[in-house]
Length: 420
Ligand SMILES: NC(=O)c1ccc[n+]([C@@H]2O[C@H](COP(=O)([O-])OP(=O)(O)OC[C@H]3O[C@@H](n4cnc5c(N)ncnc54)[C@H](O)[C@@H]3O)[C@@H](O)[C@H]2O)c1
Image (cartoon, rainbow, N blue to C red):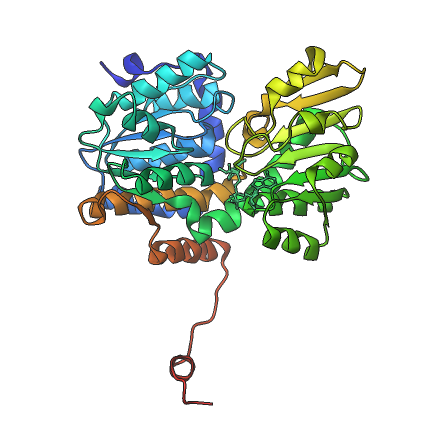
């Protein structure tokens, strides 16, 4: 079977639009372009199969093409039912990549598409949120054999992998791409910061200035979301469970308070914790009429939707990606993108220049794990510092920005404890 026969996508006639989207991001991903050139020459994945699960939009599509340029046979699926773009999927199939993905499949089909991706028997995987790894270690252990290792994109996936490593169930090495400096400092902070507001603004078409925004979780993503909310003119409240992060938010100029108090004040709520039920029944009870809830954490469990439904007498879709819940006391609460990642399910995700660095790390980490998988063993490992720094250097070069280097005297001064 050829790639077109094997693939499962919504509509191949959408391919021209998809090609244009990929072309646009490629022009804004200079770091990944450098890596593509290297891969074309060195063919690090020659003869290997790679399975990818990532938010399947244009930037991801370009990463898949770069891995293919390195000699791999690539199969790809989405990592969220609402973030897959059907035109991009069609274009990728024309580019010789096997695609198992559609926008908004039902939960069973979504899972089946992931399993089909694994049934291509990959040597290497790229995962986002740990779904491919989880399937391989639970219901489809028959496909584990032959997997050399992989790379994980996000905070939530790494938490899951570390739990597997701890109880001895992880069966191959995984590189924690999220924990590289060139990932979380830029992707989680500036990428999420910008794209969350893009998603909320284009979905609601409402003003942010003067409103109260409650950011739940002041990790790398939360810092970006709060910073950009302030830039849009909002009054920002942060809620946390970590005392140090709470002090940091306070020093950054934000009001900090428990969620039960913030719940009464917010016009917009953005959850970014990687945790569940951070907004729940007791909070809905005190929210203002018209409050708007969105989530930017990996899974759609950050606010408790069953409890919101239980407090409601009805719900309806009032605009694309906006559901209105009518509470029994007459108030209305709005939920964006069904509580899934608002920047991806109701937007195009992070800007291309941000994903340029993240996906450069993904591509280099995949090569690293393939070169070193026997030496690493079944562990979760960090991206080597040299690779992280290489991405930063490529990025600076692409910006035409130089930096200084240490003189010999400075080196010996910094290395010595006797010199004053
Ligand atoms: N939307 C995106 O494009 C995108 C991008 C990167 C990461 N993510 C996801 O966003 C989530 C957060 O990622 P991060 O890198 O910021 O993680 P992080 O670990 O840096 O931050 C999470 C923060 O949430 C806080 N927290 C946990 N439970 C809480 C609660 N009940 N109330 C208030 N605060 C609470 C933690 O103390 C921590 O400070 C993860 O699920 C990650 O996978 C999404």
